Image (cartoon, rainbow, N blue to C red):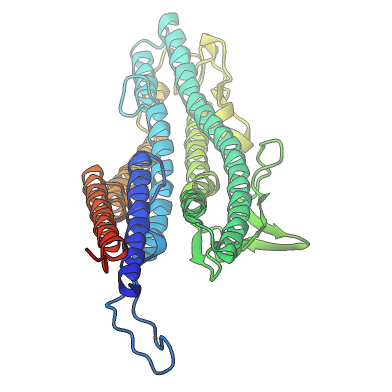
Length: 464
């Protein structure tokens, strides 16, 4: 009788385990499209014979059925850490590639409306004037081409300045998001620790934890380490940002004013935790690192190069122009003017009277075009601009190639994670059918045991 009753208990454990298995499979199917969801698998644990059933007794059973163990998330901590690292690198390159490509489009080289074309037209205008030094039309056309050239340089400088301003505001929004995500991760860490302590299922919290850590990596290239209580500690540039249930504040300490302006300093960051402020190295990855590098190095370097071109152009043209004479025989006045603090952004045509164009190389106001010939020769500014544009184009192409290569690696890691953690509807359907059939089999065992007990109780020992 005891053995028969124990068989009922064995069947009961099978019913319980397979019901949970069906629930887990159904939950996986329901969350097949949920972002960040890692599929679950229930673990079964065989119930063996008792170590010592009773004094002077021996257990003659074959086991006590199956116990429903933990519901495990199908994840690999190594793959998760690798994914965070690759996503941080991918975000860094994607942001750089996107901004640089937009700036390159604004430069418009090669093209009919860029600075190079305006320079060529400007030099051609001097040759036209040299052929007809007394013509008012040629002189007016030269001033118009000079204004077009100055406008093209100013337009490029304005585009760069606008991009820098946009990126400063973007950086402030990113830093705000970093602090929000870090705070959410700290709160999630606290909830995971409580769930682990209480023995409740923390799967959904762990999914959320991993999503938040991944987003922090995309933003800052941060590094996360798993805690013994199930949470994640996060460092940015080696500085602790999230430690258990506590999160510091990620702060812009230089390069950007609170109003989004430029304070003239390189972009830098600190992490403020309570009364402690720790400087963060500038070599960050992720979106924040990309914008910081753009604002500190890439965009200022191009803006400075463009101003150097404008300054060289104005100085060389003004110097040669001063060596010539206008229609009245007076030495040439400066053709261009600029503010030394922003030569490209302030370059303008200072000469407004066509008669003041110093085309002649001899005194007395003669109709000579020798000075115009000299001004029509390609100068150092032309070569400087060509080298500047070529160098920038090379950098853009390099970043784009790196982004494509990194994308292949990132997709490979994501594919490996998806293969392990992603929900396969066919696989889950099979798992559900297996659990269903096992449940039905356990139910049949109970029916057989019920029939055996009915025979034992109601028919055994009856006299006719």
